[in-house]
Image (cartoon, rainbow, N blue to C red; front, side, top):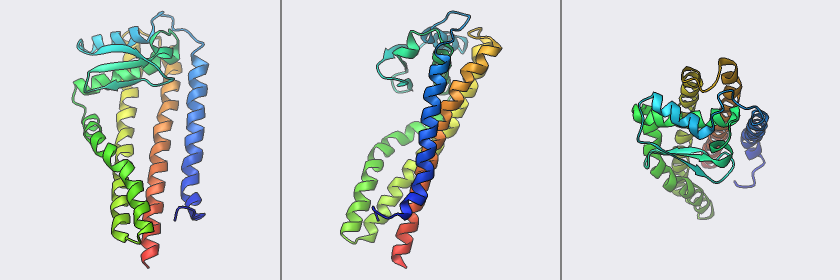
Length: 227
């Protein structure tokens, strides 16, 4: 099962899409990291203005290590920006910072898909690693029941990946609109910053496609083994 060449037919498209999306994101970010916003704002300042315009004053903004490690932590109400974003005045930095601020706005306005994704996090932290253990154990022990449970656990990860798509798309849509309304960037600059967000969104699409194809393989393999 784990050295089945048929697996490549399912996994290869997702792998290639993920590699392309990752490369495109890095290329686009680096491209616009050399273009400075006319407002002169840093990523941290842009995020702060976006939050203030939405009436949000209880979210902290702090730097964090790691390339494109930017994220919003709803449990701590903290927006963490990588150093390449926090201190930079580039259109790439502003686009990413405003995107993360979009997540904070989602949280403040009780955006449904974000709440669903957050509620799934503890489930995924448990079921995602367990899925592989259960599937492998089921194969070696010839226990179809364990394999089935493992597949169900992996299906939870697929659901999480699919729920992530509207969350990320909506955060980018908010950022693209508000960064112009707040005077952070001009309409022309917003298009460039939006290119960075569009490229980043493709990585989430690739992740969802890859997870879905892997799930389909597990289901097909399990079904065929029972025939």
